[in-house]
Length: 126
Image (cartoon, rainbow, N blue to C red):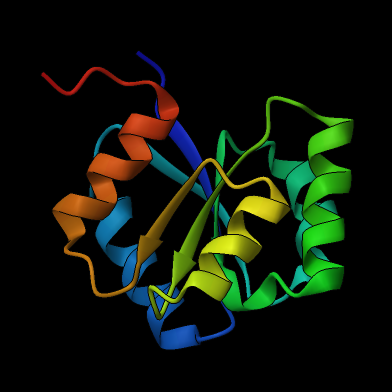
């Protein structure tokens, strides 16, 4: 089985690097890129073609939602997981409006994040 390729998008460097470090240790995951802004997202996605993009939901304001929708229209196989500091309804709504396939809060455990990534990728976890 090929590794699940991931792109990390989070404005908080410490969070992004910690997630990178933990997920990169998993043999079935491959981190293909990381960025702190949506401005770099289209180019990174084109150059790295990740299976899943883990994106901080706070970036999904109206322009962020439109960008994600544009990316999804161009490549329907694109998958976003919204990663949120809060479980507020407004963030959940923003994630769904942007086309996210899953929503997970940053208070989750690493095993919960891994389970979400693998579930979204369609990997059998039995």
